[in-house]
Image (tube, one colour):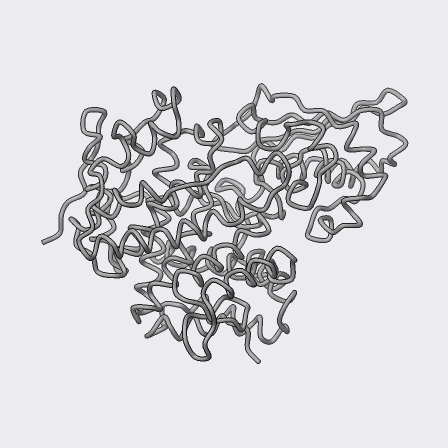
Length: 480
């Protein structure tokens, strides 16, 4: 018999694990509205395209080499890696797929939870569904369940994880992937409860990479997916974990938020999870990126592009540049100032307001081409980045919107400004399905022909027709 999803209040926080278990266990494909299922397909398509583009970068080659050494490769064994001819053991393949999806920081973001849910939940669902020979409908259902859980758990912290130096995609993603994997492996609600307790010891993700552009953030979603599969499998075999992984004395929120834990609203973890017709779908709140950079810089990038497009500025016209950003994102994309004005590498640049704004002002665009070595060392760009200062935006819409404004003061005393209060790609300013398809085609064609990209596109958007997810996963591998 289905176990109902309880509504939480401040005095019933300990019910959280069982509430999430009940939701994951009960959710069926038939429960998912057609519009949500369609949107899920487009989110998966976007992720797969990014994975293809990532394979052309050095970080992907080095990580694939490491995974090959750790897992070994035997012809015909293991699982395929997206856009690769390599096959790896289940957890290594899942970790690699998450890495590729998140590697360019071009993947989607659930805005209220400030989390990249697809980058962990989709690889987890894909890998386990293929491993267990579940259908495409089961795969999509597991993925949707994971996104709904990750989004809500991320929202509980109200942006606090970033302020404490932790990456919610790695932390929260581990629990969501645990429930995704457990659902697809057929765990009981009681086993799912235990699996979440086990996951508490696996959840991780430090923001220290922001200091020097290190590659570690890229691995967080894949690690979360791999850890989630591990936790679910341990629980399936009777391994015992803590009973209060979220609100316990040393649970997720208390151990990672410190004093900010007082601001948590545990009710957000199950808000709208009750069965239809009252169910709310957080998947609708997932924003697809128009730029390959941290979502926090997108509004300022668009503002700078608009100024460049309409004002015809030359670098020698510019005296100073001010970027207005939400106070909550300063630690991520504005500080330390010296590092941000002169990024050490492409990943550093993707989290730099000075670099992104300067590039957008000079080139009128910001894409993968603006992250190559020549662009990063361009003297004109670096000189302009040195003139970019940040201010906290008093009219910020954060966290609903990642607002931004750019103000350029010219040497002849003019002040040119443009504001993007609602960042492009957000729920209230969405990217269309045709734009998502175009982004996918551009990314996929970094690796495969147009005909092959179209074949993959049609396969992904038709995932619910797949009888066996192992065949679906094989279709995403590099074909010879």
